[in-house]
Image 1 (cartoon, helix red, strand yellow):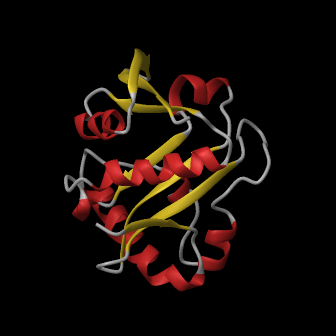
Image 2: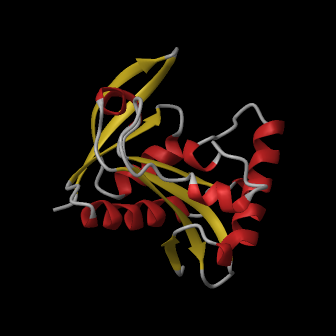
Length: 175
């Protein structure tokens, strides 16, 4: 498994668009849609230059914190298998419900162990940003996400209610 995180660029446009089109089609046709990380769905990818220039928040603004978005490239197969959004610090809302990392795997690549490795790569990016205690949050019913977080050292702190759903809050120490 030769995975690495990359920033969106013209070099990866076709791979990213292919992943997004599959994911969006899946979400439109399934009740169990996954829109995480939201950062990759917030802008229209049809204008790819604008899309990539609006993926990251460089500075805090209106309830948003600086964040970096990465796509996960499977180098052996030359496909994007997922994405992560790393929030550089937590505001009150992220401390409760969002955490430092939002992540997701494209539908056709789920349940193959990629999320665990992608989170490990995201934790390396967190460490480079100076984040040494990382909060990750997932829906209690998403056992795959919980397992991927736990496989990376996630320790369950608590469960909270958010809009009728139970969310689990995990901390990962990466010192």
